[in-house]
Amino acid sequence: MTTKTLLDMVNVTAGYGQTPVLFDVNMSVNQGEIVCLLGRNGVGKTTLLRSIIGLNPLTKGSISFDETDISKVPTFKRARKGIAYIPQGREIIPYLSVLDNLKMGFSASGKKGNRIPSEIFDFFPMLKEHLNRQGGLLSGGQQQQLAIARGVMCNPKIMLLDEPTEGIQPSIVQEIEETLKRINQEKGITIIVVEQKIEFARKLAQKFFIMEKGAIVQKGTTEQLTDDLLHRYLAV
Ligand SMILES: Nc1ncnc2c1ncn2[C@@H]1O[C@H](COP(=O)(O)OP(=O)(O)OP(=O)(O)O)[C@@H](O)[C@H]1O
View (tube, protein in one colour):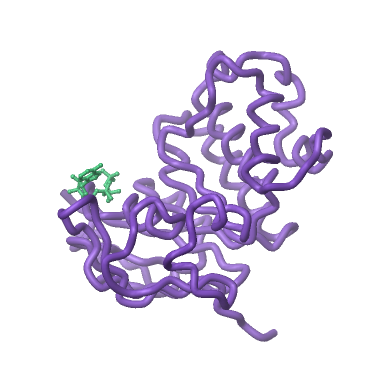
């Protein structure tokens, strides 16, 4: 099997206004992989995801995606090229129904459509039972599933997930892990997940990157994610 680089970040430097947060980040992700991005609070994980989708402009470096330089491409066009971003806190529209929240996936991808593909309910059967409920009335875990489903609606090549298990009960965490694996395997969607729950990250991902002070300081396969590394870079 040939491996193809889907996302390639070279010397990415970015931040908020005049405040730099990422310094010369180099990160390469192959098509079909699930990778996790680990690191203590405030090291720049969210900013890294935001720079991939174009919410934090680069002051240096470049990002190529699917063999195209997207460094200066606006966010909505990056979404149309196949990057789905599921931010921390999920950003479900609380007063819209589950159905209307899902339909937002059509506009994000720039494709017209009105019918939710059946695969969405195959991945997330719970959503079918709650289609007409307001998004804000779902539990945290259900809202997270809705946010992931809305991302899948865009038929992305890659999904960027920021702490999908935060504040979610263990049984739903396991469900989310299994569903993400299925989405990866059945749809071939590459996944980058920022996580604090190490066991979840270990079970889900094949590769890891560890960040410290705005840079990638360690990477490898998840088998190489030793307790020593976790202690050194993640323990408080
Ligand atoms: N909107 C903002 N304006 C200015 N600085 C910001 C902004 N958002 C984050 N920062 C700063 O950027 C740095 C990195 O934050 P970021 O959220 O990327 O880290 P993180 O690793 O995702 O942390 P967490 O696990 O807490 O989400 C922090 O020092 C933070 O204070």
